[in-house]
Amino acid sequence: FSKNVSDDTKKKIKKLGVSGVMVATNHSFGCYVICMARGWLPIKQVGTKYAKIGDTYLDAHIASFHRIKGHIKNVDDCEECAIQYGFVREMLTFIVSQSRTFAVAPEHGALSRINSQMVCVDKETLAGYLSDALPLALDILATGQRNLAEIDFLDMLRLPVVNALEIPKFDFVFLDECQDLNGAQIALVEYILAKTGARLLAVGDPKQAIYG
Image (cartoon, rainbow, N blue to C red; front, side, top):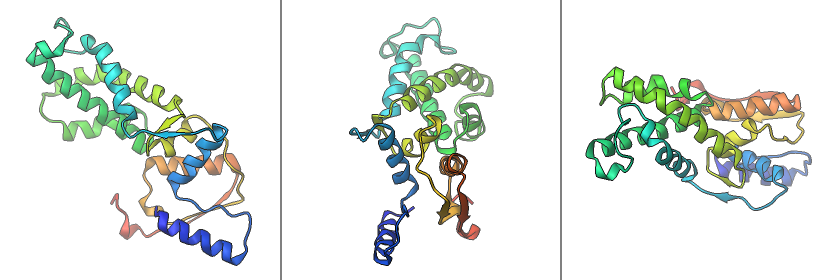
């Protein structure tokens, strides 16, 4: 989890003269795998990658949304449309983010949390928005995850898995602070083990877990 700890461990390994060992945070390892898949071509880190894709998709499909049908497409000319547009945009951002963070399908990564956090509309309206938003969320995810040239922080964890990228061969994987892994990090570790057949040694303290 800590780049400083990772760098310090690398120095200790080098000082011991041990070879064949790779030390990395989850994110830096994922980034290494993506770079390797691209033949070490430059990669651009874009924090707003999925927001930009989402806005493009939303602008193209805004007229099809539940309760927006029949309204003019220019939301700036309609206060009600603008409010609904903002709500749907927030919902899409939330669904995509939850799906990527916890490595689950959008319908599983979104529904339970949206019901408890987005309570400004009634259940029927929320269900209508969700039925329209989920297909778009899938399109946004698919578009973003195909692009290895531009990545954000979560892409470092998700792209190696969803694109089935090649993984360096390991005999053993040592994992520290495992109590703090989220779904995306767990999926990456499981992918490494499945691809390499490595044995896992994980160390953690459940009493210190940030996810409870």
